[in-house]
Image (cartoon, each protein chain N blue to C red):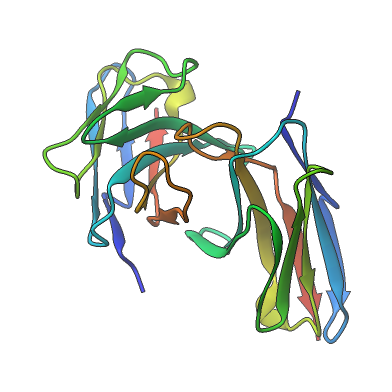
Length: 109
Length: 115
């Protein structure tokens, strides 16, 4: 089964609304990252966050290792936040990242 | 700011041909990777490589092989392409030295279409 489950699969927001994206792991993790991918674009690393809470501007990532989950909070969403958000984890050292299917976010004015 | 470069951006070929994709990173990283993103947009690791060790995902067909001239370059060769190889291939690098934990940085990808 899928080792990384993301929810929701898609999300529609009005500009200014907040959003919470979830990522659940079926195995213990060595590391994890959140990425942003524009349609047809490359992956942009948002956070490397194997544990705890990190913030960057309007984005906050919280990873709880014991519960095998991570969340990405978007506050005061903007139309430029539209795109796909991917979480990825590395189950064991040096095996490479295992990705979820992503959450597609659409923000309308 | 792009620091992981991939060429070509796009490649169309026919079944049975050999193709090679290039990847270069200017970050001074020790480890490089190749991922495949299929039509359902799921990204899967193919190879993980540094100058000490190659780790291959067991699901990767043998017609795929990584090729490295130095730690800044990791190319991907497909010996005889199949229709199911149509996908976007993404290269990444990280500063990891075996034993570390750190961020992976991705290139823009090479889109392959096999006719």
